Amino acid sequence: MDIFLTYLIVFLVGGLVCMIGEVLIITTNITSARILVTFEMLGVLLQAVGVYEYISDFAKAGVNVPIIGFGASLAKGAIGAVKTNGFLGIFTGGLAATAGGIAAAIFFAFIFALIFKSHTKK
Amino acid sequence: MEREQTIILKNKPKIVGFYAIAGPKEGKGNFGPYFDYVMKNDHFGEDTFEKAERKMMETALSGVIEKSKLTAKEIDLMIGGDLLNQIISSSYAARAFEFPFIGVYGACSTMAESMAVGSVLIDGGYCKHIVCCTGSHFSTAERQYRFPLELGNQRPPTSQWTVTGAGACVLSKEGDGPHISSVTFGKVVDWGIGDVNDMGAAMAPAARDTMLNHFKNTNTKPEDYDLIVTGDLGKLGAEILVDLMEEEGYKLGVNYGDCGQMYFKYNQNTLCGGSGAGCSATVLNSYILKKFKEGQYKKVLFMPTGALLSTTSSQQGDTVPGVCHAIVIEA
Amino acid sequence: MEDKQRNLQYNRYVNSKIPKTHPWPTLFYSFIVGGLICVLGQGINDIIMVLFPYMSQASAWAITLIVLIFLASFLTGLGIYDQIGKFAGGGSIVPITGFSNSIASPSIEFKSEGIIYGICVKMFTIAGPVIVFGTVSSVLVGFIYWIIGMF
Image (cartoon, rainbow over all chains, first blue to last red; front, side, top):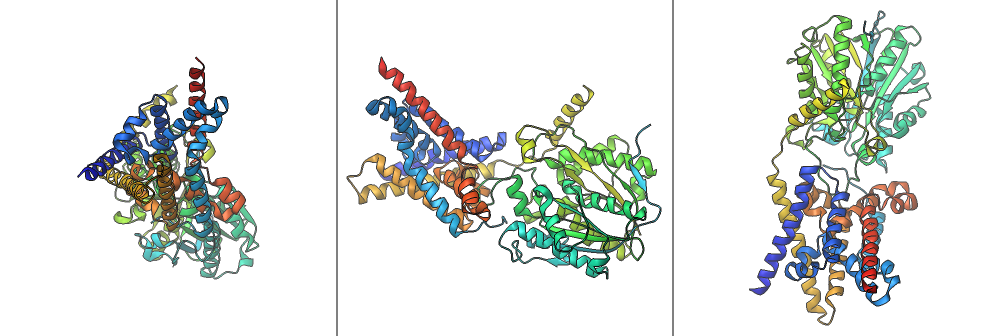
């Protein structure tokens, strides 16, 4: 029962976050790059003021999978690295924490670009 | 007194041959049965879409020369253009045929622009046979002006679908076929539309300007034509033009149509309809000229519009100017 | 001055003419698709935690995101992701899979201009701002916390 509830929350929160993105698209006609940046900055902000952990404990993948989570780990990495490494951490923290995602995105994009061709839209 | 933009052609340059080639989606649209050739896929046997667009124009050129019973050596001049940067498709297609070439750019109005220039040259007695060719390709335009094909974005409701296709026609001093009786070169008109996804609204004022000028100069009314056809204003733009003309006291009735609006069937997901240089070019060089042959049309006002923007101008926040060139074809 | 007035009036008139689409279907689809992608992420994360019980939460999430990124690039290559995006909109843009799609799609598209000038140069035409803004803001946040830490 517990696990069902977790997944329900993940579904509802994740769906809601994405729907807010869609509302932004419909009302302001903004491009997908701006949507991504907007939500990413939201994540950075939530982490910087320290409330992201609470949201993430509650909604789990519902906020970790949307790009909000990516922004939050950038900020979290920077904050953590400053505490352990001091000044150097300002620059190394953010990217180090998200290196996995960025490297994966670049690597898979490169490999699949070599394999596939683009298709005409239907 | 207003400037007269219309040139009345006394020597009646004839359209002796016409040819249209289109992509598979276009082939399933409303004008599908009229095209000379429908491609099986958008690649057309080439590895890039740009090369496919070029091959499409080459096919249209050789097709139209053959249909006019001429040889490439007899063509005095080619006038053509397309939507890609530095109009590469037309120039590279011209390279294959070795005839003199004038590249023109009027965005989606390029077909009328090249025919207008060509018919004036023939009327003046400077050329015997001129071939005009224009084309566009959905996938090349999409990546030049918008986003990669595989990006999972949504198209706004006012957006239009760039037609994959090319049309060509041969203008001659003598021969059989309908003739061009007058041409009106349009002004660049900008009424401050900034939304690049709303081309119809950006171009409608240009169509209005050219149309008013044309009616005044030739002393005609909309009812004098069997068909008045704009290029790719789309559903929204066509409605706007009807409203704008009504304000000026001209009523565009059932004889008015827009190529883009009529191009695709309702269920083809093209939102406001077709667009692109190939849109008006393929409709003119298939449906309209065939109807002339069958004797259904006697007098047609063909006036495609073009949006003269680039990605740079729109990123710098400029509005979208439009232009519209008109030609009158008479049987 | 007269032109400006006319342009304003024309813009107002055009806005009133723009076809009103019903937002409900896309909102619904974006909710469902977005929710399902998140559920998929939670599922992957739970499986990882079952398989490797001693792994830290942070590492498990990192691997989850890598799996999702892989799936999205793969579907982009197959030409499926843009078709999901057509009806789901925000539902497939906002999740990390949308980020992956925005890197993979230009790479595949510009392959025709070669590996260096096509794939590598154009890879970040859409996702570049995400990385730039992310890096800049993380440095700013780090800087602020560094200053705070000195007191």
